Amino acid sequence: MFSLGSSHQYYLYRGDCDMRKGFDGLCGLVDSELGRVATSGEVFIFLNRRRTHLKMLHWEPGGFVLYYKRLESGTFPSPKKQATGSISWSELVLMIEGIQVLKSSRRKRFILQQ
Image (cartoon, rainbow, N blue to C red):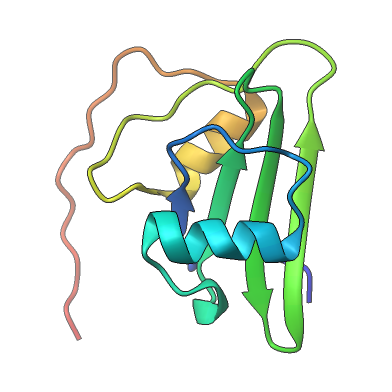
């Protein structure tokens, strides 16, 4: 099924990506640059140098899915830099929608441990 959501882990490739790369080229970047396994079910996000094109690579049972978005005007904002390269679902949605939060804070919430 073609679906992404908050249950997935998202990893942003920090370098500039050649958008001519397909499944195999992006899998090579995931393995060599990110040190992750492309078939893990995680979602890997790639941006070009001008930040006008975005690709997301995701493994689903049965094969890879490649999501691709090209902006006609404007650029994708940079999410906050994380040491691990991971970003949250909410940061991804804000980035794709072109919303840049200048100042925010996350309040502590009680999480029930099972």
